[in-house]
Every structure is written in structure tokens, then in C-alpha cells.
Image 1 (cartoon, rainbow, N blue to C red):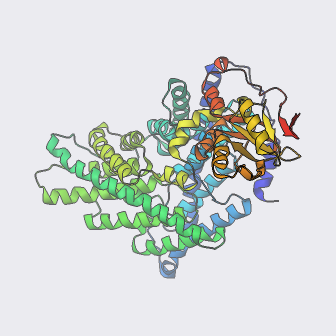
Image 2 (cartoon, rainbow, N blue to C red; image 1 turned 90 degrees about the vertical axis):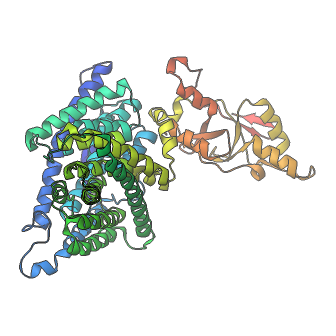
Length: 602
């Protein structure tokens, strides 16, 4: 039994339904969101401490990961990121939580959009493993892992409290907001990260719980970690439109670099996926590559905030800053592409800060009349990279404002954010998160459009008075039944009522137009094999399947047995408030009738 099975066994011992005071209305969710924010805040403090501990473990004489180690160790220090990758790879392998398919923030988005906010608590343990990745020098950040940790913890608590699907979705967003707010000391950034990326929804009923969770987590984190801004800098006000011209150039460059960052990460993931090696060895291989790169530029290791501080203070010359831009893109792509747990937010801040610092120095050389603060350019560049690569312009502007502690950065940052986000979207049409969803066959636009349906199950709206046919039913009887039955498809089932396929009007018309009249056809000849949904599946999953197939409805099964169908009409009923829906029979006994020997059999 693996260690994750031991943990799952312990978690199952938690009562399936916690005894909590019976509170009705919005007050219940507000109270839960505050308690959740406090809990996630404490977890975030522990997570940051775990990263620091891992950093000291892997670099005992070099806490800033600059490879300043004496004696013969300096010749082997490039192996440290590989060791960290090997540790995380083995732990994920032994625990059965290897990074396959959609992982990280995209996995949270998928769960919120398709699974009614139901997340596995094992996702949180995988997020904790990123401390070893970051602490050993892997080029990644803590934002993705803390979103996993906060959202999975919120979902676990919500499922134990038997909250509805809509409440679970919202609670997962609260966990994400609380995690970002606590780790970065940016409650506004955490709030809009959850609303802009996780929930894709701005509404009053979602705003209040998310705000309370972020505030509670931020208060807890600041009581342990302090409330000083991450970068205490001097930024002057923009004096004229002329002073904004270099920021326009920075926005354009940030958009192009963001698109390159997304493409590099995508290509790295494809290459590691094609490599036929055990999954647990890939993070070690990625760590080895990053370690070798670190011999040339140790600033790219880990989160890289020490180098960002140097760039904001103007301590890195322009050509070195440009070199670090490309090396950080490569190092991050290799680290995350290899399957090592970690986020892309901190690397985006690093890349943008280096780009902004280089642009500032070049502009002052070419345009001496422009009055420029290097700190303003570095922070604005960081905001532009976050906005472009993550498709989160509002979040980017607010987080940069909060971590700098000065409102004077807002105007130039907004200019860079707007231009960078637009250019990245024009070039790539996707962010790092939506790219991962698209690679898994999930359309981000469709997920956003139908995410509100994930709070309902297929059982709640399916039609149960259904006519079905056997595979040997003749086409004459099929035509008669289709003309009488008021349903879009006829499911084809075997003797055990297991779905084999379905017959629709489009298939009937095709075979009638292209088959001689003397040729006897049966249902098996013209049926189409289509996916079925389970009664427990979210309604959003049925909507996405209907978009991908050329049929008007799909079967609904329970234990592989046909119990109903869902079509576009049922989807429209799911859009309506419960009191305005037509009669559904989700709680009634299924009344599936099967055509056998010209007679329907119950």
C-alpha cells in the first residue's frame, strides 16, 4: 500500500457529513469561506517555510542558489536540481500522483468547469512536492502549487459538508484566492486571479466569499511573514505622454516574449511526452539540464526573486538581462515540461523584470531626454509577462501594484499589460493554462460557456421515458418508431441494456439515399458509436460531448445500463431555474422501452 493510500484511508475515516450548525442562506457560505481562508493562510505559511527548508537542505552553504560553494563541491553542484527532480519524481511515482494529463492550475480549471468543483485531496500533496522542485533549484514558482493546495483543501471540506455543486465551484475559487493572497501577500491579486482565471465569473454572489477568503488568508500570512512589500522601490510619476512611449515598446516586446514563452513550454511538454522513459525519471533529467544551465547563469535557478530584486534596483547590465530572459524561458520550459510540480507565475515575473530592465537601459541610451526609473520598467515588464503568458491582465496589474507597495506603478503597468495581453492573444490565442487544456482536448471557450452547468448532474435533467432498439431491428421498424417517438435518437442496446450505439435522423437519411431498396438494413448497420454519460456526470460534460458529435442527443447510463437520454432540449432546461423547468423524471424509475420483434418490451 502506497503512502497516498494510507492517507486516503485516514481521510475516509473523517465523517462523511460533518456536524455543523444549520445555517441557511448566503451566511453559511460566507462563514465557511472565512474559516477556509484562515486554514489556507496557515497552510501557505507552512508551504513557504517548507520551500525555505528545502532550499537550506539542498544548498546549505548557498541559500541564494548562486553556486558560490567552496572546494570541490562547486564542480558537482549542477547535480543538485537533478537530485531534487529525482526526489519529486520518485515520490509522485510511489504515491501514484504522477503528473499525467492536465495538472496544476489547468486541472483546477477543469474541475471547476466540468466536475462541479470536485477535486482530489491528493492534488494538494502533489502541490507540496513543488517545495523540493523550487528548493533544489528547479525553475518554477509556488503559485500553481498553492492554488492546487488551496482549491483541493476547499473542495475536500466542501464535499465533507455536502455542499451543492455550485457551492463547491465557488469554494474552490475561494481556496485559490486565499492561496495566492497568502503566498504573495496580494489579496487583490488573489481575488481577481480566482475570478478571472479559475471561476471566469464576476458576480455579486461569487465576489463576497472570494474576498473574505483572500482577506482572512492574507491576515494570517502577514502575522507570520510580515506585511512589507516584496520589492520596496522608488518610482516616479509619469510626467507626460512622451514618457509613456518607451512603455508602449515594452508592451509590444512583452507580448512577443510571452508568446515565445508559451510556445517554448508547449514544445518542451511535447518532447518529454514523446520520450519513452519512465515518468519518474523525467523530472531528474529536466533538473540535470537546468543544473548545467545554472553553471552559466545561476540567477535562473528557483524562483529567482533575488535576481528580480537586482533587476529592479538596476544592478544588472542590459545585455546580461536579455541573456537571462532567454535562459529563464528555457529553464522554466524544461522544468515544467518534464513533469516536475511548480508554477509559471514567478518565472513570468523574472522574465518580465529582466526584459523591462534591459528596455529601460537601452531607451536611456538611445533617448536621453526620457526620464526613466529602472524599477518602474522592471515591474511593468513583469506585469506584461504575467498578463500575456497567463492571460490575466487585471490580476497582473493588481499583483504588481501590491508587491511594489506603490500606486505610481499603475499607469505604466496598465499600458504594458494592455498591449502585451492583446499581442499575445493575437499571436497565440491561448495562455499557458488554456494551452494545457487545449492539448487535453478541452476547449477553454466551451469550458467557460458551460461551466455553470457543472453544478448540476445529468440525472437532474435527463429524459427517462425513452424508446430503444436492439441491434437486429429492421430499418422499416426503426423508421416507424422514429416517426412516432418524440426523441432525437434511438439508442441501440444489447440483451443487458448496455449501450452499443445510437441511430439518428442524419444516419437514416444517409443510408436511405445511398442504399438500394432491396438491401435489407438493420440497426447494427446504421448505428453510430457515441460516448455516453453517467447519471453522476456534470451536465457540462454532456454539453461538451454534444458539441463534438453530429447527433442531437446522447445516452445516459447507470452501471453501463441505459436509463435515459440528454439532448439540447434537456440542456436548455438545465439553463433555467429549477422552479421554471418542465417536468423531469430524474427521481422516477427509468421507463426505457426496447423494440423487439416489432413490439416494445419494458
